Length: 191
View 1 (cartoon, helix red, strand yellow):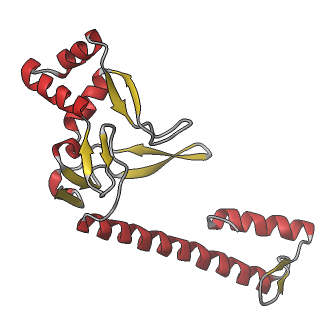
View 2 (cartoon, helix red, strand yellow; view 1 turned 120 degrees about the vertical axis):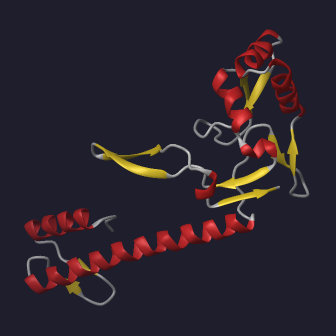
View 3 (cartoon, rainbow, N blue to C red; view 1 turned 30 degrees about the vertical axis):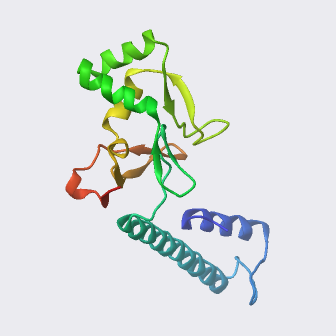
């Protein structure tokens, strides 16, 4: 029931205070009794270790699939899968790359897009329809993202950034660390 041992032992303490008996498929446990409490603590430790092992196996399977190029990750805005499973390129993106070659800076490209009222494709991670393509006004961040993302250059990249949990108060939040060097990335495969 608990995600970690701290929560499990706190639950056992509450059960012993109120005289609640805990049952599993084999028997009843009384958290007030020392031996039953010991068995419940050990089963909590084993459950947490099992969850850890399952998480490791799932991540290894994902990495192996990515190394073979078979992991289907969400595509950035402007790229889509066609019916045969191939990735197709939106013509608006071609304009952004052509204008970058001509104007030489991302800020000039952004100004060009804004003066001509051209929007850029974005796939938001949150909101009412996550991962759905939306067209937004060009910002410098959007233009930089398009110009620096290897998917637009035709490369399949997995593991560019490592995500570590950083505990901030009672809630565990995630932050992205700085990008990895190309020799540390798990998978980079040309499409």
